[in-house]
Image (cartoon, rainbow, N blue to C red; front, side, top):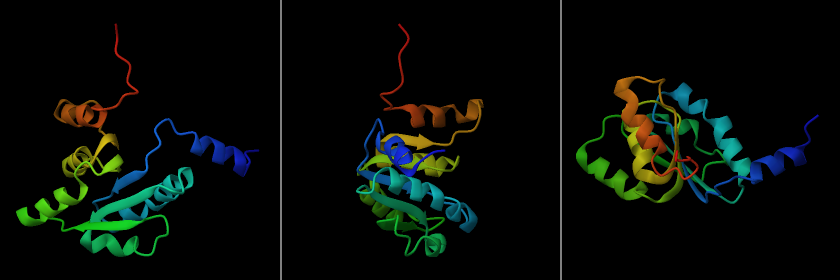
Length: 147
């Protein structure tokens, strides 16, 4: 039987303590809703961390009032250049960790711009997605180099 204290010990012994975390969930309402357990786990792992969520403007209502989110950052599904510029100014290298729960090009690029440490879903080995794998792994100090 796993006790609450055991779970707390596992969650708080993170190798990389992130104080500013961005969760990127730029998809449909159901996709955003399915990210709420992840937000809860992130909050449980570090109750003092600042956790922001980047979502499409029309899906923001799903996370409004969620106690695990400090700030909702919204963007249109097809933003124009001025809106992209505001978004970049808001998230560019502001976060310690960016978590992208989608395999889309845009969400992985958002994660790349937001933080040096990134966690992203990347499709299985397809040549077209090699750049996503590289971007998701770049900056990861936990990777070991072969001698």
